[in-house]
Image (tube, rainbow, N blue to C red):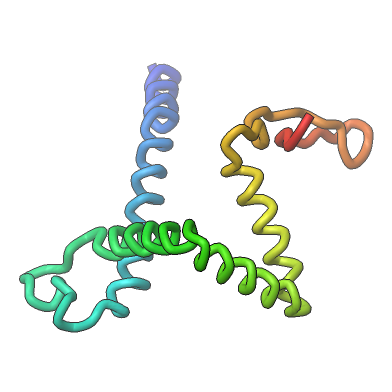
Length: 140
């Protein structure tokens, strides 16, 4: 009887843990964006000032709107030119250029429209015989 209860308990954990962890991560990210973005909103535009309680997700909504505006600005000729100039300036900063270049390559690979990068998982025997690691394909 105790073995059956133990199995039910473990099955319950296995079923509920991914859902609970996912909700916890989402709620934590929304709270983080709220803490980062809402202090930047001008006092007279911030609904958290004149409403009886804070608006959850306001920082996330403003962040998404900001990213859409940045995307639309860089889609035209002037934005493209400004992006190239900013890229050149960042490429000249000694320590930052290494991180910037790596992050830029990863993001471009992931978001490329016809890319198969990071779509397949592979198992490799690395760094020595008998040790296996998971990896993602990034090309043919």
